[in-house]
Length: 361
Image (cartoon, rainbow, N blue to C red; front, side, top):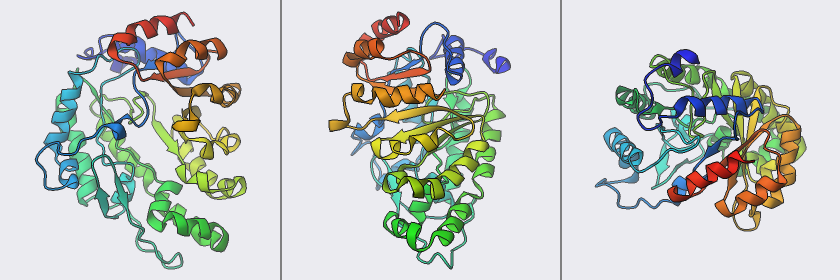
């Protein structure tokens, strides 16, 4: 860690060193002077309308234009203050289905994401499920990564693309509705599909890790958390469809395999449907934290989820919590600061005051 921190200070983040120290204390449920604060809210990118941005013949053409992606990122650097633990990170993004694309699925892109159509019709006769390093999507992630690295030093970090190789990847291959039937009708065959999809994931991660570490980069993803070890975002959004019994049978084995491959794991807990499985999730190896995604509408405000947050804390895990600025004082009053990281959707003019209030926590 120290050898990387001794490099040139980040152009957009002069307080980089002290912020990284706060994050690494947070991984261990410790704190230095205050809990970490990132000025951001989850799914922000999906709320930004980009229709008509750039002169492209299709949404996919925009996603696949390396220079456009780099240019747009550089423009955002000049628009942000990067206060608190908000880090400048280029994310070579081909949506959450990138690993499915590496396996050969054909995407449909829109303005903010991409999806795939199921391609496994028969669990007894699986198509080849190998990572195709020569396909255009794998090569595009390499190109985005390399191009960003050329201009990154002293300015920003370059991260990993968004890769999910477990049950959510399998749902993309098989289809969510079919998989809901498979857990009952074809459990052994479904297990084989899950393992076949996951098999090459550790090597794919290592491939990109070698590229980034050769340039002195930390491990960092869309979650914007730096690690000078290996870092991974665990997720299982499909778990919303499963009973506890089926979650433990079909999701936990591959999640455990994945978690064992990394030093720092943060679980992306996407809403109350997935939170039903929190007792199992908290037993995963090398699990440092839970990112709690509370949802919208009746799932707000954050106060109703304080018992869940406290349960995670009591299990010795850290928690990422989305907050609105007007919820901050109430949250500080009700929750112990141990292991808490706040993501706050706040205008730049409010951010300095928020950091002062969190420091007094």
